[in-house]
Length: 283
Length: 233
Image (tube, rainbow over all chains, first blue to last red; front, side):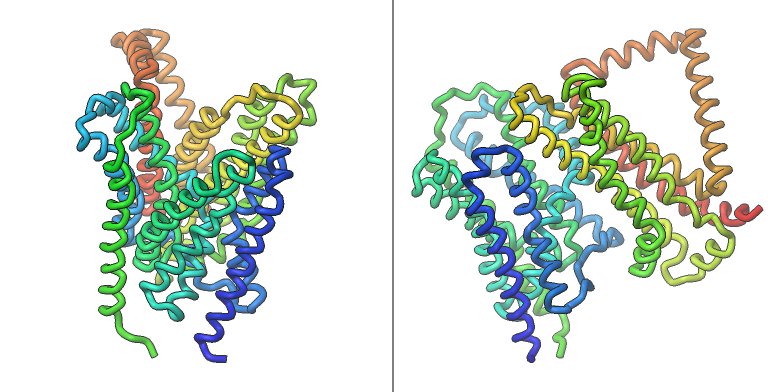
């Protein structure tokens, strides 16, 4: 079997296992709504399904457990760890704060005092070191396995696009859970799904670049943690300001929701392609 | 480097995996719920006990490498003693992180079960567990250089002596109010731990612990070879 066929087979098995977990999540929606315990157990298993799928695929295909990118590789890569921490924070700051400032509502940012911002940044920095490990359940699968198998098949751009779509489709049960539970409409859920697809595809480009640059999944774990936590931290600071209940920034908020992330994706896609061109070709 | 990771895993895998069990400890305390009190008290008590047991187990992974022959051999390898120490520090950090993850995972399960059983007043324990984790990391940052410099047994003893001397000096300064020390200490504590400053203090403390842990590694690199000379005596 050629290397490409072998890769396609492994990728196929991996995706089958991941989407089997997704199916289990969807099938258990009713019992999950009825019981917190069932919800918690299924949710935890589901959160780790990409990592479980990568381990199962490695075992089933007898590929072995080498090159899982589980070394921290701190030496020479500390700056990329810092970038993994800082860039999602900068991105979400731009996404949340810029529309407020541009639309002339700076008075809403009363909670953003120097002390509050510094305290939040310190807390995020400390927690990203000790609490981000849960996201290894995703990154070990997506960046540590799936991307490696996809790149020889789809190329770098294709991996970013297809990988991002797969990654966001995996979140689908969570996106439509509200609708299945009778809250909201299907179109709202689908809009959320499309928005997430755009964001995750763009952010996935950065995570792929980080993983390739450091040969480790841990910077991607930190960046993913920051992607999840920055929103909460900034939202908390924003809630301390004087924001009217019916506040609506309109179109400008929608623009800033996606534009910074698209720019980020373009930059890192460029870097990925540039570094690929620079690296010597292997036979 | 992979070889060193393999060596640590083979040598300490049960201690590493025991961190998962330590995280589950608060769940075991529920069996004694009627004796100890309500669910939040059980969780708090269980978390503190788990923290103590996990800390004890983490120090055990430092044993076994205080041999002269090992010290000379690892120094002569391509990774060198710095590589060995780096893997050791990464492993201890990994154990602390694994313990934290396990603790939070089992606590989440416990809360979900309690909620299903009708308990609605469930407190967020992260304001206890997260500071404890950073204290644990700080303690390990102190333990490791002592163990490496003086060996396991002697290192623990010397650390104990230093800690006692430090505690006696501080106590004496507080009791005798040396240079208004106790008043200054009280005022500083009052300022630091007021509502506005609390999150800032905790943020600075947490990041400082990470920096101290890294500095501890650098100190260990400096003193390791001096320690090796004293092993097996």
